[in-house]
Image (cartoon, rainbow, N blue to C red; front, side, top):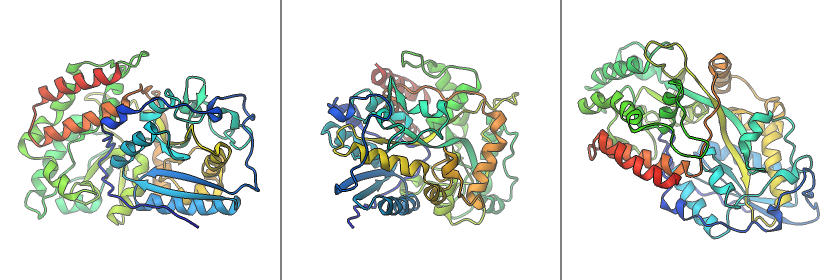
Length: 444
């Protein structure tokens, strides 16, 4: 059996989206007859006598790769005539590679998709419309309609959600004990969190290496989106333009301006030295804000006996978190795949098979179907994530913002300017001016 698994660097900065200008060079590709859509169930089935080779790519770390390869082995047992060649990379490397493939009409048969890029690829005819395979090779009856709809672009179904997640904060109790300070609480506001970060940095200054409360969280675009939603602000218009102002962004960046000036956030220089790990994975920062399904990755990277999960901060003087839940990731198929029926069957198997659900647990979010959840061992990490989402159920009061084409590009630009801000190369005002210029250009 051929297995084309590649190990690359896996920089784990939260929500890093460093797709380069190559993403903008994606050209519209003809999807061929397999991408012309049709009625559910009209897509045909896998011929068991045909020898088929599929490619499947994803982003993630070694832990995720191990889980995917176990799932692929089960699929190949179920479909002995299909060989799946797999490949994975870091998020940083993943999207530039897909952009190059899309320009050459050579995307993998099946690959992980993110909401940030679904519209971009779906609008350009580069993904297989899975609608004809519903009720045939693809069973989506166990997925809630509103969740399945997140995989639609226009009338086509171009991605199948794999798990749900919501934004959360993580803390490492061992580091907090070493700092000798109290852990951050569930009732913390953003301003409270900033004060706690300053206290933690002061307490960790004499350690070698120095310890910090966190990295500069304002560099995480999704946390800014959460901050806007908490204020009742729209994020994007129906036309796909920015719905927030330069003043909104400047106010967000100024939350941690004092920390940056005082050297109380994990330094950008040190983060570069730790690559491919981030500060939390390297156990040099005590907390991290990211999606709740990152817990499994953090356990794998740190080897910690205990990591805690708690809610994102609130606005000052407010108890409303305004959380939203989104697909952790989706699976899509190439619009130029030579074996669309087999691609649909592979997506179906990874989405619904109970053994696969047990293999992944909550590492890709809480599985979207009851079938996938039916054999999960809900102890340890999975129990923590599921318990957190159940605890936050009443706090999930907002819909996930609709992401426009070009979202991945503007998220990447945000990260790039955040790094420049961390290095002291630009001011907060220059960040705002330059990011808005790039974002408006990308979205137009």
